[in-house]
Length: 358
Length: 204
Image (cartoon, each protein chain N blue to C red):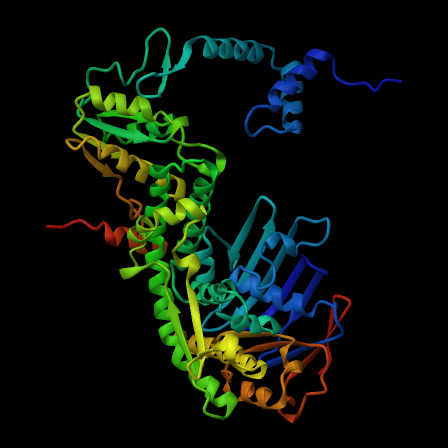
């Protein structure tokens, strides 16, 4: 769990020092006061990526180009993590010792589950949203996934550029990149498949418990790498199509996670309420999968959804989330609070300042 | 009133120094002022050295290493080297560490870069025609690819492997990847360990 958080020039926070109690912590305040930014900072410190911004540079204050986040973790050992971002590179350190690679740094960190109102787009949105969800999970669970994903994306950009650039595509060069896509796609596909296999039963059970009726959620991973995950052969066979469309037509960047409810696609045939339940079931599945995978429970960051959930789903969420996890909850109002939150710590967030209330 | 600045020769020197890699405006100014105040001897020595480089140093037309007009390339003109192995590197500077290892006695071929479409560098910008010419004419039995292990380096390696399949009698090999010499397992990252495991060798 996260014991403390230190921010410097991060979004609206000039500088902030915050002790974080264990269990449930409620950050409440009006809109645009910095609640979500606090959770985001925790996510970046622990996982080196933001659930909101695609480029970390966006998190610096207006007209600044550097920021820093630090914090201490308490688990089987105590670690202090430090992340410093600057335009020309980032610096990572654990217990004062600087870390060369992100993988070394992340090994000392905790796992994170992020829940927000945007989770609904896991069900309704494009495959992109679901791939991001898979990537966020897989890079936390599998060493090597992150690196493979980075290499894959880099090779894909070059390959697509080559396909578009000339009237007659330079196939020998393109093939050189196809080899790299193939090598990394095997790692990505294998990890995603393994991940969905372990996630599916947890999310499917979650769906039943939250909906408190016979709703059969079914989750399947759909690989776009072709037979036997042999992307090289698949892409070679689809060369004509690539010549026409001028993009890489298959591979993990076209994978998807198929969600069906009672054998019908959830995006089209499920009601809005059911879709919200599916999104929640996926995230709770993730939390419980992380709980099984590591001795330390994951940190759960919940942005704003608490006030939006109806009482049934709120109860289900609280019944099914890992009890041992630390939960940081951002919310605009507290009128949904009941005596189950008697022990919860309350923090008031106002104009980039945080005060402990109880 | 016009603002006061350094005299024109000094300003000219600063402008030139700024173009050097790793030297910004502040450093350029500091170096120029130092040369003016204390470094007359060094400055004159420097100007001679620069003139000598411009006159005498060329890229070896065969291997791409640094050579002199007068004496040619120290590697290509050496008679003590093995003529059946060729090691391909990205930059001429990559040749020196391989040489210092003492483990390689064959010839080199520097590509002068690597394929990187997004930086607008393709095979035509590299010394690939020179390579195929050498392989056609030479008596090489083996080509060793000593390229970097990032995405561009790997892409270049794959490209060359395809290209070299036109020379079926030449064996193509790549540098092994694995544990650093003298290092313990605990200091290696997962990817290095994975590669080391995949590329393990028989011990007996």
